[in-house]
Length: 262
Ligand SMILES: Nc1ncnc2c1ncn2[C@@H]1O[C@H](COP(=O)(O)OP(=O)(O)OP(=O)(O)O)[C@@H](O)[C@H]1O
Image (cartoon, rainbow, N blue to C red; front, top):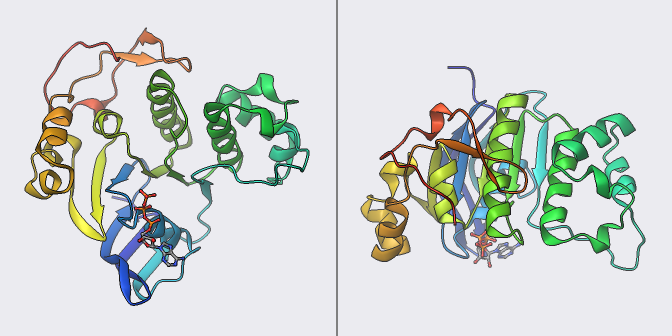
């Protein structure tokens, strides 16, 4: 296996002597899609920020591969509401060429909004804009903090599918935070359940049976996500519609079923 893009070794972050992140070990390799789940306040964003170098750590070590290019999609787009800003201008602020910016907007399905004001975008369009800005950097590692926030349920499935496709196209690693447990279980390679420390981690098909997962999320949640494992026999387009196509090897956990997303 190649060297990891990022290694967290026993990473701890304390606020006022209270650990928000407690001795976490983690490797992200090219090709990985790793999702961090956990209750509110579990330290997920703090961990991601520590990985990015935006949050000083109080213990352990973060190692990033030399020359690593990271594309970061933050939780939401925060900007001064009174400042006029078009999508085109927002993308130009990334420092990439106009062609690269337009290509990234096209890849996330919002090139038609190039002249729109960022203040008028819907929740889902904002998430796609943030993803386009991250993509324009041609990252080795994509880091996403709740990428499907404000996106409707069909749009969520499409967004996760898009992330998988981008992983394949860019041959990058992906690490993200998500609260959408059903989608995480269906669309992720590895899940890490965080509650300050790593409660449990592994393949989606296995993790829902882990006593630590059941303790964190409750029996009924564990049962509802456990029945969701399946082989994909189809893909989704950007609008969330089902299109027939080849399944990906990473979808091959758990029981097989032909299903329709609701
Ligand atoms: N800069 C800070 N100073 C003090 N406490 C902080 C700071 N940032 C985060 N915290 C605390 O650390 C804990 C973890 O916060 P964090 O945002 O990482 O959780 P999270 O798992 O991402 O939560 P959510 O799912 O609600 O987004 C919380 O108790 C939060 O109040």
